[in-house]
Amino acid sequence: MFCANCGAQLPEGAKFCGKCGTPQGGVQPAQPAVKRLYFDAKGLTLFNYKFDIRDEAGNVCYQAATVTESMIRHNARVYDLNGNTLIHVSQQKKLTMVAVNFDIMDGADNLITEAIQKVNLVNYIYELKQLGISLSGNFLKLEFDFVKNGAPIAKVRKKFLSWGDSYELEFSDPSLELVLLACIMMIQIVCAIQRNRRRR
Image (cartoon, rainbow, N blue to C red):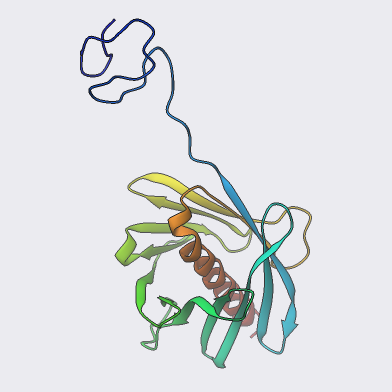
């Protein structure tokens, strides 16, 4: 028996190549586990939204809120259950005619990535500049996809049978969890801005 990848001779019935590690005999590498988190809107206070973020068992694992500094500048924070900021989103001070750009920062105010809005006639597209991730989607349907190096890495959908702005996040890379949570808060800000523009 020989390795299907590198050609090394293997003992009969080997499940993996001892030289290159490639699975043999139809054995497929394990797929990463898919994790789902749910944003449940707790309500609106003045201009700000609050959320409980729950796991699949229904346990609250994070809390989040949008914070309006002024009528034209918005922020959002994701907290642990003790009220400590884990990550936050801040609308950039440099104003543009149409685009709404953001900085995503850790709890100590260190920049993780900029989120730069790209012009598109149908959907919104954001580039997470320093991470090489793009986010595109429809703010009316509340459906968004995250892509890195051409491969899908996460998706956000309006939570099934939910009222208001409630979201389901599905992903498999745990190292991106907080960034993805911050992106949902960014989406929430943009949705609120769009609603305010339509009311004018």
